[in-house]
Figure (spheres, rainbow, N blue to C red):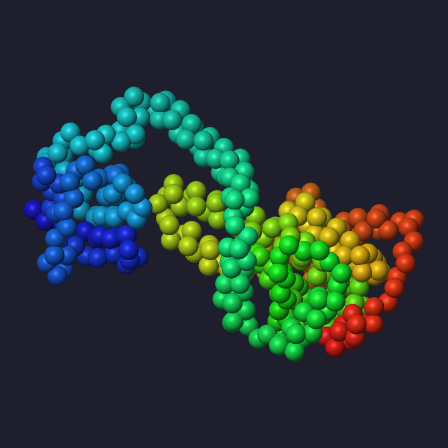
Length: 357
C-alpha cells in the first residue's frame, strides 16, 4: 500500500511529493511523473521519528536523500516487512529498554562530547585549517567576497585611486598584494580587511580624519589583520562551528546561509583582543617606519570612539572579545610615554591625504 510522503533528492532544496511503499526488499518511491526510485533496507542511513513525523535518510555519503511522511502507518508497514531492520534498533529504544537512568547517562555523555568538540576541538581545528589554507586561494577568496559585497554599494573610484597611491608611497614590508577600495558612505566610520589583502574603507572615516598619520595608522591596522590572517581565522572559526552543527542536525543549508551572511556582513566581523592588539601594534609600527607621529593612532581611536562606545560602553571590557577603544588608547600612550619621536613630514602623503579630503 502506497503512502504519501515528501522526498528530498539531495540536489534540490525543494521536496517532491511522492508515494512510497515498503516490502521485504526495500522502499519504492513513485514521483508524480510515474518514475520510480528503489532503495533497499541496507541503503537506510538513519531512521527517526519525531512525534507523528517519520524521517528516513538514505545513502552512505553526502549528499544524502531524505524521505519524510506524517503517515505513521508507514512504520507499521516497515515492521511487518522487515522486523529485523537494523535501523529500527536505534539508541533511543536501547535507552528506553534499560530505563530512564541509562537514558540520562547517555544524554549527559552526548552533551558533554558536544561541548568538548564545539568549544575546544573546533577552534583548534579551525586554526590548523588556516595554516593549511593556500595563500593564493585566500587571495582569490578575498577578491570574490569583495566583488560580491562591494558590487551592491557605491564605490568612489577617484578616492580609491588616490588612497592606493597613498599606500604605495608608504614604507612597508608585506606578504600580500594589498588593494584598497573606498566606499561612498557618509554615515559609517569604519574600515575592514578581507582575506588575502583586500581592504575596504568607508568615506565617512576619511572625511573625519585630521592628519595623514591617522590614515597611516588605519591602513596599518587593517594590513595587520591581513598579514596575520585574522579575518580568515575568524571565518574558519565561525564556519567550523556551523559545519559541526550542520553535521549533527543534518542541516547543510544552514552552513551555506552563514557563508552568505559572512560575505554580506564581514565588515562587522569581530576580532579577538589578541588580534586587535596585534593589528594596533602593526599600525603603530607602520607610522614609526614612515617617520610619522604615533599620536596619530590615538587621534584615530578618539575619532572612532563615538561610533564604537555608543553601542558598547555599557558592556564591561572583560566580557567582550573586542577591546574597548579607551583601553587601546591607553596601550598606545604606554608605548609613547617618555619617548621622543622624530617626525619628518612627507609631502606626497600629505598631498594624497588632502586629495582624499
